[in-house]
Image (cartoon, rainbow, N blue to C red; front, side, top):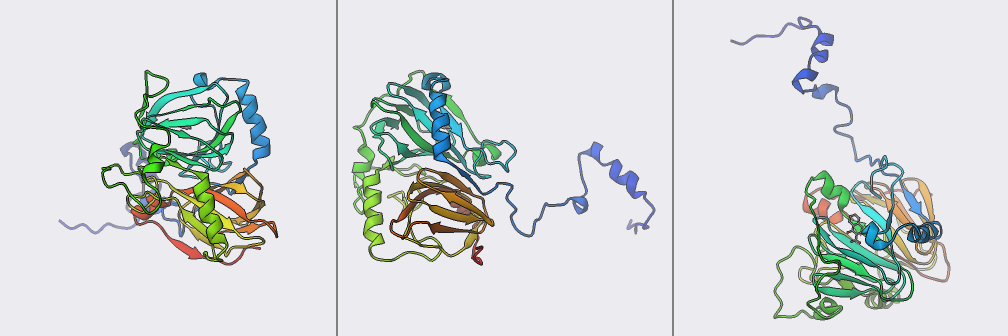
Length: 352
Ligand code: 1HN
């Protein structure tokens, strides 16, 4: 029986008011479900190391690493309602391990990376192997890998933590496990994985089936050499200058399935072309000073500052020095967007 509804035969107000109890809602009255383009709630933001270093050292007098489990000041984006997130998908934090301290072994489904800011000679143990940490080193603690930190040096050790926590928590796929031993058993020599894979050469006897890089430490000395060699040749892209991706030597792809890591050099005085992409990123200033214009806001930065570039925010970088390069480390959710077919990029008008 086909019934043609008579307009006005049902009282609209009463109809809308009565829907809640069925746990349904009219799509035609739902704003914001299909925005014309992404509108990140995250703000462009810079966290200043000079201020935060002082607070981090104060934290060292408030709690020890063992009790805190991880003594970290999380970088909380002011646009994200207090969420533990630097961009909508990326978590970042500054971690302090003082001489003699251990941050006990645990593992989680979330993937993590460390970029060393200050201090020398502490370690992160991951998968039975210690990574000895030096400034500028990238250390991976991939999903579900046991990891613990210790500082046997005589100075404080500070690094930037990056995780995919906001993403994996919104997917409701996170797990956590604490070891009964505070330090994991070591089964391989210190820094073993970085010696197994050396640039263009790969060990034939090793098997590997994990979705992440078999290399857990990317030493600064190698990274810096690559940047220096390229800086002299004048290559690079209009939007990013010399931008190098840290790779999984097994695949040539990103180091972690959810997080890509990059190092970037901007020649003296360089002002990059503006662009935007659906991927978001957290940047850390390794060297130099300058500014990034992000979503119309100018974020001035200097060495060891960290700043957030939300997804789809137009951004351009400026090296503020006329005689020194600026070097930026960054991590991004790009691998996720790419894998799912949601990566989009476009060039944009300069904002300044
Ligand atoms: C974690 O495991 C570390 O191992 C640092 O150093 C920060 C933030 C949230 C969840 C786990 C670490 C973290 C973390």
